[in-house]
Image (cartoon, rainbow, N blue to C red; front, side, top):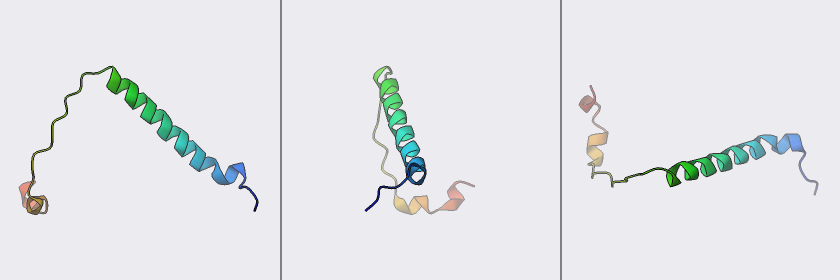
Length: 55
């Protein structure tokens, strides 16, 4: 079995590096910020399907 060429895996490598960079940066931002997270209120799933609520 032969290893793939760089060109065959380049886009996957770039995507992985971009994701890793983003995760590191987000961790840095979160560490230096005050963040309050609240649980989302309970929403009746039937309401989500009612498009007239947004009109």
